[in-house]
Amino acid sequence: MPSDPMSEISALTAKLASVEAVLDPGAMRKEADSLRERSADPGLWEDQEQAQEVTRRLSYLEGELAKLEALHSRLDDVMAGFELAESEHDEPTREEAERELAVLRKEIDQLEVRTLLSGEYDAREALISINSGAGGADAADWAEGLQRIYLRWAERHGHPTEIYDTSYAEEAGIKSTTFAIKAPYAYGTLRGEHGTHRMVRISKYDNQGRRQTSFAMVDVLPVVQQVDHIDIPEDEMRIDVFRSSGPGGQGVNTTDSAVRITHLPTGIVVSCQNERSQIQNKATAMAVLQAKLLERKREEQAAKLNELRGDGGRSWGTQIRNYVLHPYQNVKDLRTLYETGNTAAVMDGEIDEFIDAEIRWLRSQGL
Image 1 (cartoon, rainbow, N blue to C red):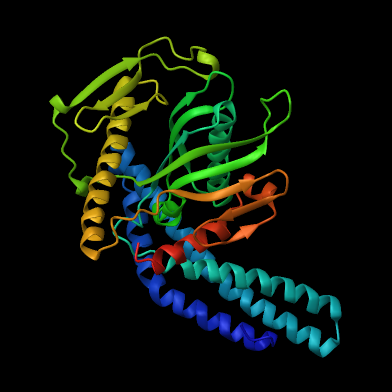
Image 2: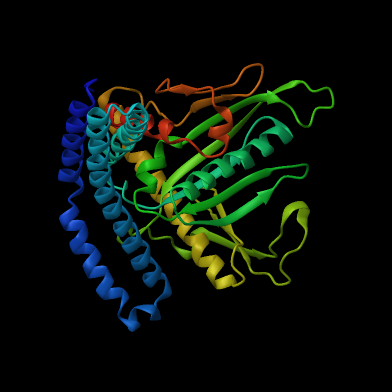
């Protein structure tokens, strides 16, 4: 990037134009206009799920268009700031313009990464499952910490989330959780988070205060749509109903509304207990099962292609990131080698730099 501010602004303006050539704001406006017409139709709300999908998509498009317009406006403003600072010899104004230029550089670079999301399912919403691994109570606590990271990340970006199921551990934390991030391109953005996350820290559950290494597995799936056609015969499923429960097994529901579905041929088990209705929970659990079966089918197809390519079916969904809180502070991705010492920010959901590096790495690997 040029060191001269005006040259840098010109380069960023050109980069923004290349990004818009891919995102196509004109088509986005046309789609947004069509969705506004649909949302104004009272009949749409007879199907709540479809209505929510329309309003989420419209909100996303309006937000993206507003972001693009704001970036153009801010580039103009920062150019005016540098010009004013130069003519008035105003150092504080120049420093403020430099800070804003650095922010714009980061935001436009992140937007450029979006143009790399061209996979078959990248535009989908994301379904995330987290399971605690080796490490006992620390692993369960770490699984809960990972859930918080992704929920805080979604909150920072204004993405709606919905927790479908949580299995609480006896001492602390969670055994597993499944939740959705309901935003376009959430899957394409987060799919690089799939894999094992390793935490090293002083154990909160060791009375001698020793260092503990614990693991949690993150699974990222695209939310299924009607076009996916995953047929599951009734005789291949076992459906159990039970009462929902909260931390420590405390009953939070007096009816058997929670649903667990076991897919007999594969052994995949999914459950949902976030709704009061057994019918709604069953529908959500079926959607989660379909997503897992769709991903299984994709992995089988990818394994065959990898075998043909001669790479032995090598998988990238293994240990991907280390989080070290003791004896030093560091979070490092083992694939991209991106790292930061600001562990507090990462634990609070500031993971965009890791995500951007993952997207570029996945693209470079042909994944």
